Length: 141
Image 1 (tube, rainbow, N blue to C red):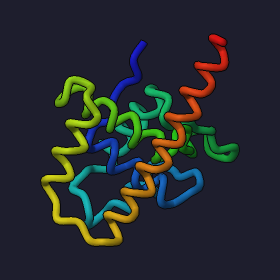
Image 2: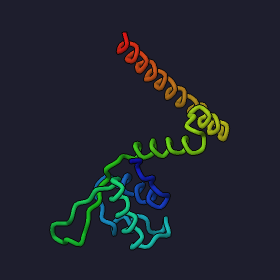
Image 3: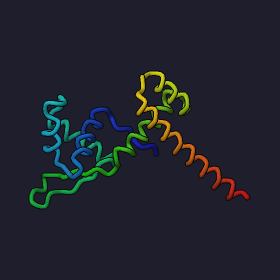
Image 4: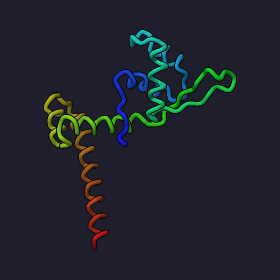
């Protein structure tokens, strides 16, 4: 079964939890979002429940007050970004990562530092690809 995608509103909640780095109640998340996002406290609770159902958040019940849930992150920001990126490439570029990268690169003026960072990422990708090919070749030999 495919993983359910995180909606933009759910992503805003996840940004708070990833930044906080430890379990939070829905009230704490709501307070952190006040003034930045127009979302009711009830909506924050509903979205956190959905994220829990999707397996992106987990929770424990407060020992002193069984009505209070402490939510914690079960999937890292990096995992979620990778998944969202894959779905984006699949949806808009028929799974062709090269076309997706080319479109993005043509949309922005990059600094020399950003270009250097991309070159390092490409080199790591090349190394992983080579390692994968070496393993496949060794398995069939």
